[in-house]
Length: 403
Image (cartoon, rainbow, N blue to C red; front, side, top):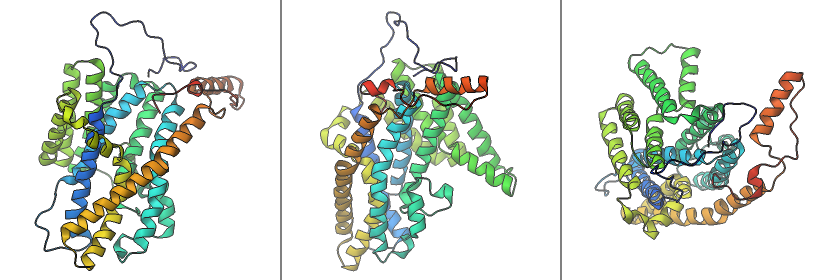
């Protein structure tokens, strides 16, 4: 995807053939990335079922250890998103392609998981996990914390971060800035570094101004852009078929920002993730493409949605029945996997297919260039823009890899 210079024409520019010897762009799917998603989801689950349960639900004397850093699997999700969303945007022709693709990927499964989790938790004795019906409804937006509501499941906080990242990069693409992703990333990291220094030095103003700046920083993902940035750098590395001093510099800047915002220990963990990602991008970990790991990766999103609070309820019931602690964890993990499989095959995939098929055949969507042309014409004539309602997008005539 490239955003042209003229605002009246946002169609993808025709590229001339690359010179001989130029690395070709990879178009096949990296199965290892799916496996990484699955492993990250398992790490997060183990963290919640060990440390998370003991801290937030009830301490257990028969659990010999905690998986203390398993929650950093969420950080790996952010790195993966930086890579995958960069790949998606590079193959996006229209903003609606990206928007429909992300919506169909995230919301149907989420809308199934929220009420399921809400009713199971409401029927349990874990009152500390329960939320009001009003908050449960607000959760369906996927940004409940921004709207002042409590989350139905504590794991959902990362979805708000992902959604803010999608909105930000799509806005940058529409503005044309994403044609130079490294320059955009450098600016983004610089703003985040200034924000981090302001926090450390207590330079933020108090009152409404400080609250507004904090909300803007949250919307701009300043706390996590370094993680998304690592994924962006590795995408560019793989897309171009080679590294460059600019990519290495941005990777180093991402790790430096991690150290500034979260400390040297978090920087070490993130560096380990970066090294692992480097190995995947270079094809050094073919074992990750094993079918069971890829299958688990395909369920990683729905598994993440249902594992935490529902798992807590199951573990609490097992503890009340005096079952072994590992039996409770195993039952919770098994139930979460079964629920994830049911939602994935019963809701997520059928809904995704239906939404995208309807989108490709719909006359309700207008192309970006048509919309901008209508806006430009309206600005020139003083009339309100009214783009033709029957205009089809090119995606309506065939499949779209961006979805």
